[in-house]
Amino acid sequence: MLLFLNKTWRIWGLYLLAGYAALAVLIWQLPDDKFHMYFLNIGQGDSTLIITPENHQILIDGGPKNYVLQQLDQVMPFFDKTIDLVVITHPHADHIDGLVEVLKRYEVNAILMTGVDYKSPSYDEFLKVAAEKNIQTYIAKNDEDFIFGAITLDVIYPDKSMLGKKFINLNNSSIVMKVLYAGKTILMTGDMAFEEEDALMKTGLNLKADILKVGHHGSKTSSSQEFLNLVKPEIAIIQSGKGNSFGHPSKESLERLKAAGVQQIYRNDTDGRIEITF
Image 1 (cartoon, rainbow, N blue to C red):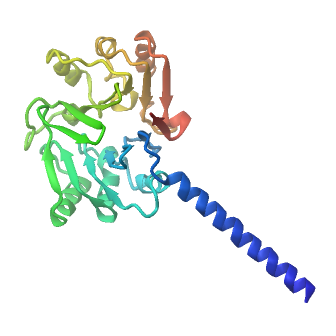
Image 2 (image 1 turned 180 degrees about the vertical axis):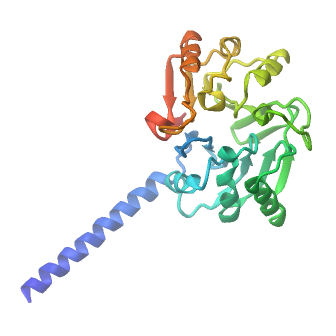
Image 3 (image 1 turned 60 degrees about the vertical axis):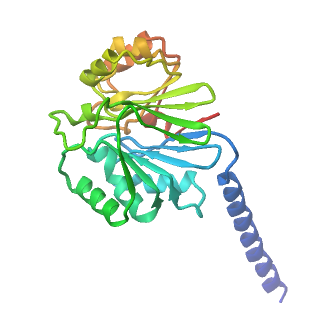
């Protein structure tokens, strides 16, 4: 009987420890009135989640396959299945694949996209699910911003609607936006290449930013020296997958970032998930 009691208490002790662990995770995930921006570790692709002090969630791109689902589970409360805005910078697979299941599993209030003419299984499925769920969809252009409490998403490119337009290089259709909060600016660039950077610089817009999400995973065909010298970021973040076959980030891109005076460079392939908190 004594042995049975000891075993019973041991089992109850394990239950209590598991309960405390679950409670600790829940408390850690609860809104804390801070700005959080997570550059999710989803392999070779882009996916960024913003959680505002008012607990709005904005998901920019969804990465390849469905890796984003596990990452969202780790940074959002398990009971919260709503996303206020999903942004597709452009519909390449390494940016949109994961968003199909996000639309199916989460209550998404709105979508921001370019609406470019492009055919792929994941893009077609995304559009189908969005239509079936009657999700409000906005076509990006630089005269329309999005405000979530203290956060502003300032769309700075494209400068006119790209709805139905075809691109030889789809990367150059990427939505570019500034995330503005408390005097800080984070520049999100999608897979913008040199040509789009040139077009953006010709607009004369102020491109200065404290933090730069480096274009196209640090490809050598993005982040020109002239562009970086205008942005002048203190911090650069590169979303590239560990051991990717493209060699991202490129040596050339890293050298240009250093030449532009970037103080810190963070990378998903070496640092895992990256979090910015204000």
